[in-house]
Length: 402
Image 1 (cartoon, rainbow, N blue to C red):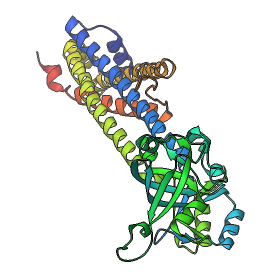
Image 2 (cartoon, rainbow, N blue to C red):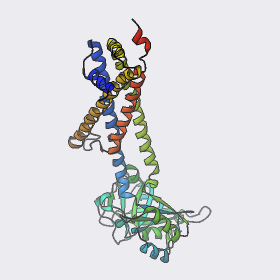
Image 3 (cartoon, rainbow, N blue to C red):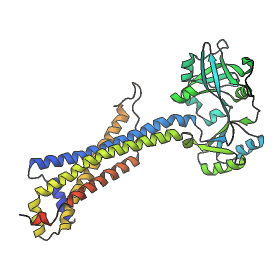
Image 4 (cartoon, rainbow, N blue to C red):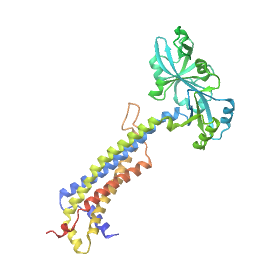
């Protein structure tokens, strides 16, 4: 064991000559522990919140989604469909048609989007996970599944008969202002057979229907689609599949993965995580500079010992290293203890739901290796810098003055 490390350990675990020194050292150590614990809890909380926010998109968004480069629709020919079926890495795909529509149910109205899907859609998306009441679409083209929020706004439940119909209107294509308002819109009357629940935004946005109904409503040809949604095989190379898709569609498509489809949400969550990390780190910096204060007070308290060490042959660098190591050891031990406390709090939250968002929903958390690494590196680096600044205060004047 080196000379500086041996003396640093003795100074760290032995009490100072006065209660004031001991209290200051205790406050500094507590600041390290609380800083490490707080930062770990915040990072674990945001990791859980991110998983919770993205869980619904994992149910609803496909692995890859194809968009046209121009316009709303593009042609999906039988030859392209055959090539897509044979493409390695693609497990399933579904043809999609989306358009904005006007809904009318009894005396209530609402604008929304209709999403026409084919029979293969449940193989691409976890429809069983989003459906909360009623049934999913069947072979009947005049059945729809509405969002929970749409159902509430229209006071529309799940119907089993054609007594109460939901009217769907969409403007007819053409130029100028039609003289007869009845000819300005295409209309279909349907029955709502199910209610889905994803998140507040999507619950307000979509009603699902068969792709045949949507094509009929929009007067689109049989090979026209607005999107194609794909589910990839578990071992698929996303970049390779995207490259082959571009070849199939002659580079006339845009391909987005799940992250790109939720780009705004990812950016918002990452920004919130970064801001919270910086705020807690700033607080930790303020707390950890108590370590510098404690080291300076310890230097003053051990002035006579420092002169003795100098007289015995220890040079200034070795003496400075003693207090640098003392502060670094205090930070290291405090970080480990703070991480242990933070881990305990997170485990208690996961098992006993100490903090609730609502009466039935506990605040989500997730323990990750990155949280341990980030906290450890952040706190120990700040503690080392604080200790280095404090130990650099030792100079010839401290040793030679009477």
